[in-house]
Length: 603
Image 1: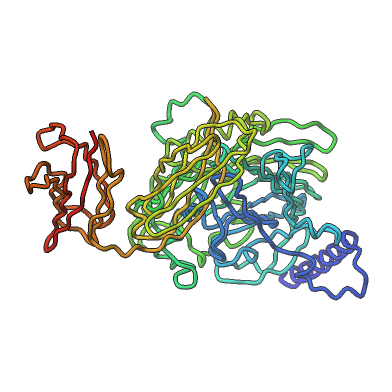
Image 2 (image 1 turned 30 degrees about the vertical axis):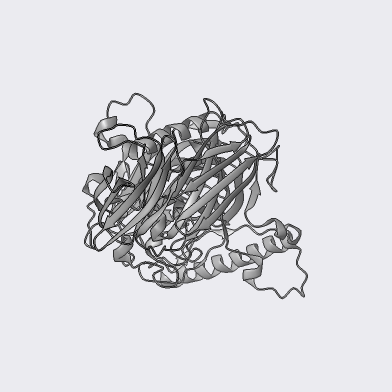
């Protein structure tokens, strides 16, 4: 029996190699003298979706995310925050042939990390030499200013289009947790398209569409989305000294929810959410307060001689602890059983912990099943999405469903704003941002936000002239230095906020010296801003004196934090009475020192 299986493996592998060589030869028309390696012919690669506020690596071989092999975005939200919400993901597709063989092809699973090509059983579709410069992942866009502008075929502001297949049966390289020494090809070709927009709320959603075409009978075809949804802040692990992070640091701290089963949505009258959600149960000590999730949107099926029709597949969901040495998922039959067992696993049993003794859940989102024949076509639509809160995530899931049902034709209620320039100037303890609109652009509302490890905050700004804006950020956190992400949003009246530009800056720590700074304005009427700096947390008293030495008002008297401080004095004494115009003295006292300045009040 073993000899027969070995012979079948050899014949299948030899035939598969011959077919692949013929396919590549036909596609590439390579001369016999071409000495390039297989790596030159087939390139496992990825690109990062970055049009919106949710950024993610997309591959040309069924794999999603960075898997700790790089620091590239892996469901990073907000974009530029270095907060990832997924380690890795990939598609699983399984079915049963007319010879009753169970076949499953996987794009990722929990036996590998630190690489983005080794876990996959999918192979990128070869492309001709004259198209290599276009890349293995093509970009299309509805935006005229984008190099990939394609008004006929583009769906979104940033489409990524690629293809991969599984038509070559071949040996596996056995590793721990993988007893399958041979992979039998499922005979599927997959075309993958992903869509992203920059305006809210769709900027928090990445849409994905897979088109499946089999070259053999595949009954009970089930499509599954495997993912390790795991939030964490990469800023805690500097490149070269802490990356990739140890498993005990990144994992075991997360919660998963099957939203449809949550009590608060038990009476929901709309279609099922079909949504799995995740968040770090301590929000990574405040560094990762957002939520992320995966949602099934819909499916379409077209028989070889028929028309497209909507499908209503069954949905099931599995979770298990990350365990690469576990042999419960190490062959196609066991994987297919996971994919096709009905029902929803009990997500309330997932228990995180501060240390490494909590669960580290992997999840499998299963959609099916269909009986496919050669030439049939199946399309699966899903969304990877995020939100600033759980409620925001659920709302974004509804927007994703609506966008899919409207044929991916969302309406941007923003009037296009043409930004001529967005500039950042850095000095110790201060970041100055300025932006200018093109001459013919409408003047919308703006919102400038600063993101850092401490969270996000709005930055005030002024319009200094028509179409020109200036913001001077002197937030206390800038004194301590660090990396900051400044994001400029705009919206037309009544429209949605749209991300216009992002600047990442690094601010050096400010070395402070305790003392008074210049008041402004001075001379003044009726108010002035008193400024002082403290090199450490300490007591300070700020008083107003007449030139005769009489104390007239106390502006501050107490403990203040390290940093720069600003207080307003309105030219009144301690009883609230207006003082006459003239010269007054400003006295600052701290433990062990005193300093005096001069103020001129005009009346």
